[in-house]
Picture 1 (cartoon, rainbow over the protein chains, first blue to last red):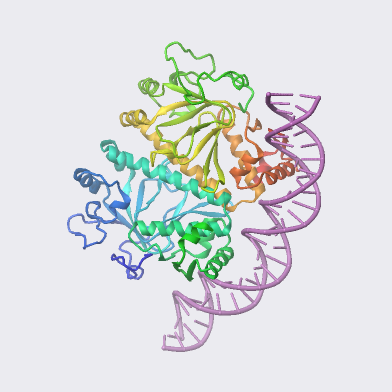
Picture 2 (cartoon, each protein chain N blue to C red):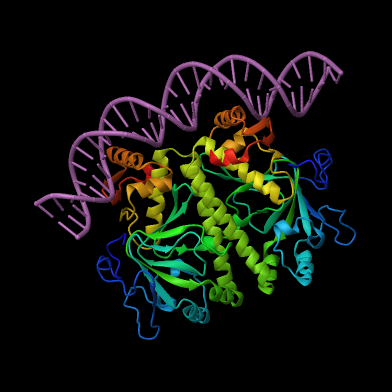
Length: 267
Length: 267
DNA sequence: CGGTTAGTTGAGAAAGCTCAACAGATGTGG
DNA sequence: CCACATCTGTTGAGCTTTCTCAACTAACCG
């Protein structure tokens, strides 16, 4: 996890054996026995503390109960493993429960571009809806868990619930807007500005989840950051050093402390 | 228009007076009187030759009739004018009928990034769904016409028709995928490769509409192309010259002839 | 027809890349 | 628990690509 104070399976998860093999990593969740620990993620949407991030705020209790019947399973993905790969058949959307992912698109010549980093509460797999196969791949940056949202069931739920319907539109349109502003970054910004806006974006997302926006752990390498920002890892490293020298950020390897967010925004 | 052989209001449109002032450019279409000319765009979806590009292929006749009751109006946008601007309230999706558009996102400091060029049959406005206001703006590259798809009505139509519902998902997800591959381009390609893939993409889209993929008119300036590709206009111009010298493309100003598409794909 | 805009080309500057050396962190097996 | 290997990150030097600025030409418009 990025922040220290998160309660579910923290760094013990990496060493604990995955309940299912890498081939069949679907783990059914017992919906009756599992009771959410205080302040923790539940295995059901109805009691999950991330629901506010992941689902619309104004669901009725009936809708929430119905949601529990759609989102029945979770899946663990070990660090470095893929949740899905390009050309995999699209069957489900996913929501990050714990851990984090990168999504990448691959050019035929092997070049890859990281198109996003996903942290808890964020959706994965929306790219698969249009063609029935995924166009990008999602790789876990650390041992992670996702909720599985089978698309067929979710769709029929959406036909019943206008709010859910809207939420699905919302998710897809948000992804469109997110990617637009990323294109703006790639097309018009200097290396310095790209890294600054990356850090501020991450900070805002952590803050929205109740974590510190001023201090967090990057789970991705300098190379992955570069791949996301359209830069080489050396350039990313240099920019971190520059921010450090100028008193904007205190990077200790992957541990980042944002010292002067205003200045970072002005870069 | 890009291709010469398109029948509806060709280059006469620019000089013909807009039926409504620039402020209130909504033009009601009389659904009964207007009959589609042979091979031409109709003012109704049921008889529109672009429907195959714009809507799902397998609509029932009932659905098509219902579509006619949703898409009632078109709007003319003069060259350089905006169909919508950032922060405008989102009310409708649009489909380009004639002409072409660019969509741009603006940074607060005035920098702008072109995030797409839209030609007939392509959707506009999907960015507005998530927040209720548009995040980008759509500017006509030439005198153009769009079909107006009021989102509220379209949504309720989608609740009745699973095919339309799917199509809306399809449109949004396609936009996500399109933007991903654009990010790949901006993040990993050289100037030469960017221009090559831009030309090949345009060619494919024209071909899909029955126009020549080997020869077409660019309605956008070198500067706008640069803004899309994350390059300066001089660089775009130099790359055109290089392609010309190498016998890949014959550019005569805005008139482009692709001589060696294979080589272009190999760049 | 003259003024304006769009496109081309050249020369020099700058940002970011490549290659290389090195330092720290991490992990592994003895 | 240490030694070694590996991986990740930092820094420097020189190079490449693209940008900037400028001059010039072509196309377009009133």
